[in-house]
Length: 94
Length: 331
Image 1 (tube, each protein chain N blue to C red):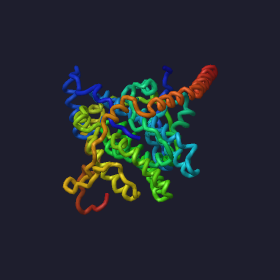
Image 2 (image 1 turned 60 degrees about the horizontal axis):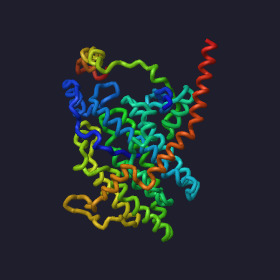
Image 3 (image 1 turned 90 degrees about the vertical axis):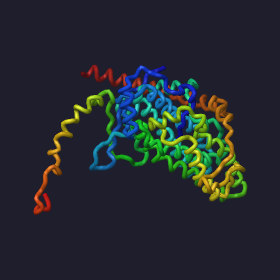
Image 4 (image 1 turned 120 degrees about the vertical axis):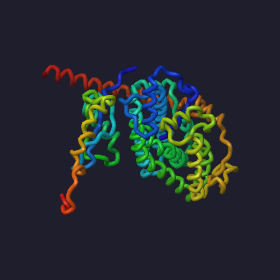
């Protein structure tokens, strides 16, 4: 059995002004082939105007088992949200 | 194109495992709350195994599903039909790729899955072991086989494993074109000459029962269904989906002016569903075992496609090796 080509994660920008979004992955020996495969696999219906591919092994990810500690500070700092503050009725917009 | 779990007896009820009961309980609670499970999350081995089998079978079905239709590409009746069929077949290839990617996130490599298919160990949908004898079959396949596939796949968009659910969203978005192009072929033939209408009827006669079998064995003979439903891998049972498909398809056949080959088919006012005749399950199990009319030919064609492409993969490897060597020298 031969070896799989490296895995590349594929990101597509649906149209100008939007972020590239992760859509899936492809196997390819190099970046150029990865782009070609990504085009054929993920943009057969005008899904995008721009493609990024990045080797999956080059992505560092947070550990889901640590997500409690990692994201907890955001939940306890509700004063970061504007709705935390009560405005006097006289002020209509702020 | 379609999935239902075959080969169920292989891993019937979950074996007692050495897994941490607290982890299992937390997992069950997340799934019960309709949360999505992602690749790096903890999951029971049986969940991983069931999903790997189901997703890879689904991927294999998409890939093998290209073969019966490819058979008619060079004989499509017009350039328009040919271009449409080509696009549909390309979609099926794409669906296979989305699904292989999803299955790989569970820890099985693409090579292992392809090897399992080519060696005959892995299963794919029984429907592709029936031959496509004439052009009307292309209509019937799109209308009925893709129709049944959609019925199966729509609930899978909410399956509990994130990568599988996301792949299914993409697949479903593309699949409804497949069904409509098939119905369009049937409509054209049903409204054509008497010979064309007879061809459409003949194709319906041959594809109706195999399409119903696509939903898999009846619920009372489907040992893993309860666990798959609890884990939200499946959202509806085989029999529920089969009934939905029949209810949706009968009026479409009437509109075509064609007759569904089931003398027992009758609207049941009380149930609010169509009653239908008994399904020949012996035929289904024979085909699962690889005894379909074209099973050997399908695998032979698959292996040939893979082997004939070997030089392309080798060339791409050589190109990359040369490029890497050059940049190493330059550095």
